[in-house]
Length: 272
Image (cartoon, rainbow, N blue to C red):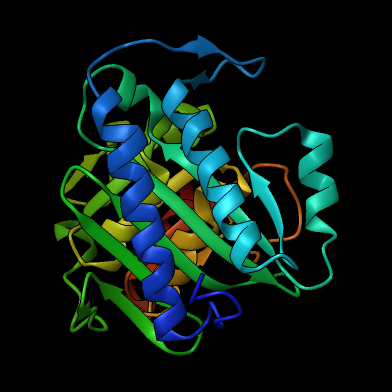
């Protein structure tokens, strides 16, 4: 193939990756949308034929082009995931269908999420929403884009009380969840069921705040880079930087601007 050996962290390489992800999403995901069919995994989450087909196809296509990189995919065994994280040249981190529960139930909010990790940091992130044909993507230190348009850094943020927040209550501790339910600091809240698209919509300025009690590496690897490249801030609930070298779930507190992040996290720290 003519793109073998192309640097994936160049804009040309990013375009090749976008083409691959768009192709597999429209070949393997969209024809199955609304058709039903899923099974429960040991952790209680759902998996469909679309998940496994996308992971298998992309794993092979990426191996052909960049054979030195490992692959951590959600639909792999934990032993395989840990082994792949040790790859010395870099590792792809793939969620073949983020928002599987939405997909199974006919809710049009799901995506393919792909990141490239090198030396424990994301250097490339790409998230594709096949329903809206929106591809969010970023290269470390080079910015972020929605399709062909560069995502701008945020302007003056609204007051915290006027913000729209994405909050996943299910994984929060009861005290914090209760305080958010009774007296939230923001204007309104949503929970749409796809971590990958949550990060993207935050980066695009469609929402202002984010809170999640526990995500896996493939849930945040690509999206957190996209947010970072537009000037957004993200940490764990404890204020630590997000880790990209382990598989245990991590909490996430994020905002599209530094000022909003400080106000949001201060409220959380006081009420957690």
